[in-house]
Length: 143
Image 1 (spheres, one colour):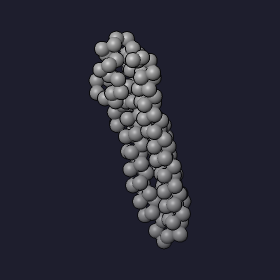
Image 2: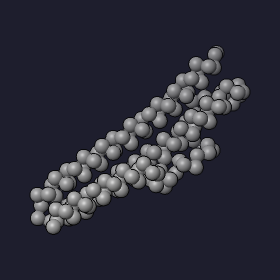
Image 3: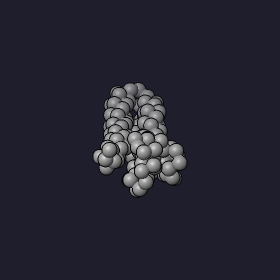
Image 4: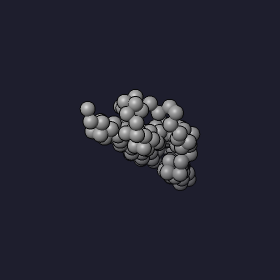
């Protein structure tokens, strides 16, 4: 049996997981903006708008945490892809043992922790900016 198509398929599967995780991250950002906009709209009509804008921070924080979860897993699968892209095909025993394995344990990925992902520059700018916008709008409308 020729191993090259199987190796290519294995790497394709890993890349598919990476793509789905990136898509989930984008969806979370879309939902966070949608909910923040909805809260801004409802809060503007309220007698206590600052309370609504404070409530808006809850889903923003939840989406931030979930986005960090998906980013951490995406980084782990990217490290897995790089690892197997280098390793597969080097020895028949190793290739047979690892073929179609999605096990990420033992793969070095220091950026693949949830805390590192949540504190990443892109997530910090997006979610802190969104929270600051909600609070600024709430402060302006409360006056």
